[in-house]
Each structure stands twice: as structure tokens, then as C-alpha cells.
Length: 111
Length: 116
Image (cartoon, rainbow over all chains, first blue to last red; front, top):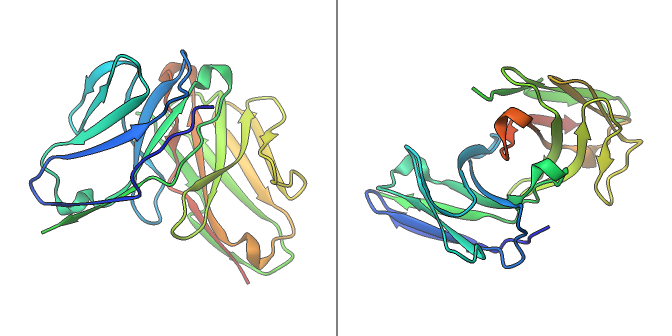
């Protein structure tokens, strides 16, 4: 299983764009990259998933370089409610592999 | 779509009793379900993976006789904490994945267990 590395914490201000980078040097060919958001005492919430290049949805963008050894979650114009822990997960469910959570990145959005 | 529920949302029990937590996929068939445990200020720790109709696969260090997992149908998995002790107090979260969801697992809201 590919191990992931993320910054432990980040601070930002309301209205700014936040980029959180995750390193996964040992990513396998069949692995997808998935990002989750977790608020205290809640289950993680799916944000975005990708395999390569760029993926965008209504809440975030995910940038994946050609070598796929890292990925960057981009949150445009964050608000106070985006304060949460963000997890980057790498794995292949089709082959019965679990998703192992790293410590995540604690994002604090300040007014 | 892709909603996962858990019941109960919180439970308090006496030491030595058993507690059952249900995890349901409400709008999809979950071929695989995962059970996690999370202590305060820590990340999620995977306890076991279960595929419908098969025995669960437990992570190293997780006692399978203490944490009984049943995945009898494509929409329901249960975790039973047997003979619970105060050190089992934690936040238990399930997630579910299905072939229709490609590579994504969706999480339940979690169950807070407090063992007195």
C-alpha cells in the first residue's frame, strides 16, 4: 500500500485559495487518489478523487502530475466552515485493498 | 446518493457488556465495508475489512474475538464489541464501497461508544 505524507497543519484566511499537497512516492498503477474532509465527531466526507491530470468538482480541484507521486488538493476561496482535517488516501478497492489513513492535515481558516 | 448510516449514534454501556453497531448503505450495494476506530485528536485506524458473505479480514493487533464483524447482506454490516471495557471507548466509523461507486468509499456518521 502506498504511504502518504501531508503537512500536519496549515493556516489560512477567509477568501484565500488553499493548496494541500500529499506525497505518495510508492503509488501503484491501479491506485486512485482520494481526498476526504473530517469535522470533529463526524465521519469523513468525500471531497474529490482522481487518477491522473486534473479533476475539478463544485468544491475543489485535484492536481496530479504525470508521475503521480504527489497530488495537490486546491480549495478555492476558503471560509471558516472549511476548518477541518483533510486526508489524502491512496489505494485500489477493486483489489480488496483498504485505505490507510495518515495523520491528515489540520486546516485552520481564520477570519 | 451514496449514503451510509450508522446506528446508534452514541451508546453508553457498563463494563463487561456487549454492544452492537449497525452500518447500512442506504442507496447502493456495498460489496465491501470497512470498520475504523478513532481516538480523540488522532487519525482513523482501520480495524477490519469485510466483504459480503465472507469472513472479515482484521488488521494486525485487532482481536477478532472481541470485535465481531458480520456482513450478511449487501446493505448491512454489524460490529459487536464483546465484553466492552473502558479502553474500548472510542469513535467507531464504518465505510462502504460498491462496484457502482468505482474507487470511492463513503463513510457513516460514526458511533460514539463510552464504556463505564
